Length: 206
Ligand code: SF4
Image 1 (cartoon, rainbow, N blue to C red):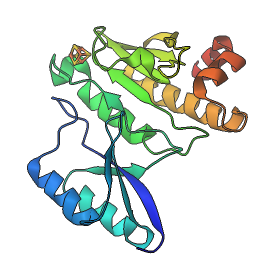
Image 2: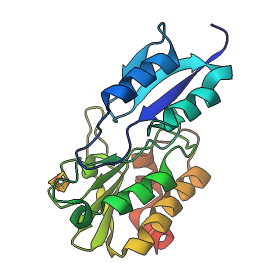
Image 3: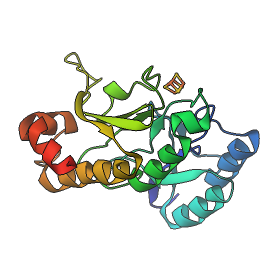
């Protein structure tokens, strides 16, 4: 193999969670080739190493089968969503899909994980993500700065509460772009939140 690159493969955001069909798994296998290593990450993406010159063709091929392909590494991951167990409408499935489209694959100083929960039970662990979105009836709360790794773990803090659906994408993308513009080198998002303060981020979100 010549020069290679890693791609991140995700199932679509859907009721039931991160589901792959047998056909999709077979397609992934065929597309990346018999020698590829496929890694199951902790953030619901499959990482596969593919030849650089075939990257775009593989992406198109997998997307035809309803899969999503993003850059691996230093980028926002696809939305880490819950299973939408209380029904598509009540849990905001369409909103989550729109949010995923807006945020997945943005180049960032460190890999960024954005969680979404369709209700306050938060089974997708939104408070352990860099940015966590929780649907509360017909509004949304946004949490920032969760840190699940290492020995000094902490929960994300409430940034804004009671956001209307139309404000969700603008606010989350504004936070991501503010982080991109003002992070010091490869500053972790949780450290960045502490440094710039919740109050300043609230102004960005406002
Ligand atoms: S967060 Fe709520 S709606 Fe989503 S899977 Fe968990 S319990 Fe169901």
